[in-house]
Length: 349
Image (tube, rainbow, N blue to C red; front, side, top):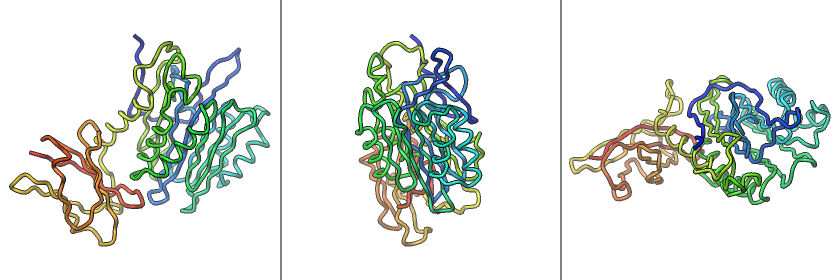
């Protein structure tokens, strides 16, 4: 049986992956979200498609993603042309707003047919984020988009409006980091035939999926988080695992193996794990400033979340009954503005 391909860590550059139709380069993507986090300065990008892997990176849906660390993100999809993506990238570097970029692309389309394109663009804009989206009238149905504060969601060849709505609801109503919210948005689209081409014979939402997040200090070809999963384009039967679920597994593993990096201590809270003689685990927040809302999240080594609880005081006793077994666990502390402020490991004897 053919095996799907996946990776947890790649160093991508903006490049093109396309399907070949009668000598014409054409790439259709379905659902995607691009967003920024004003508090952390992160730029994030996620999406999925019934386009499979190629012989070169980026694979499948990842073609559409252009993350410019510290500045913003651009999704160019539907009848993808590298020239449009390159022009959008240059305009963002020059300081143009998302709407200005889209207006220019429509007026100066690289293939002289902007009605077949779809765009989603968001920037940080020095803490006052801007977003815009566009769906050409000749994109393949069902097509739509929505842009809100610090995010843009778009899709074509969709099962229906419910895919866009579900992604938006998951993104807006999920706590945690930008990466966690983007992953939740993708899970909101995990419906058989979300990309209608994947209903049969694959019985899945998609053939490929990706999740990418860049911190301000990253370079475009070396992002903090860059995950993808793709079945071969030649896959011809029901997929054993939906690509979004495979991506979730990669992301869960990435979370528990990636430490919080903050060498200057600018964004970390001093959290201390203490162990009692009876084996209880207590998280000591007494060294943290007062008035900061905090959520304690605990994961097992496989990345499965065991509990998530609001910290109500200087000390938080772990609910051992919700853990259930001995071993090594990972904790992550996030604030109400969804910043990751502490992470580490602890033990249950």
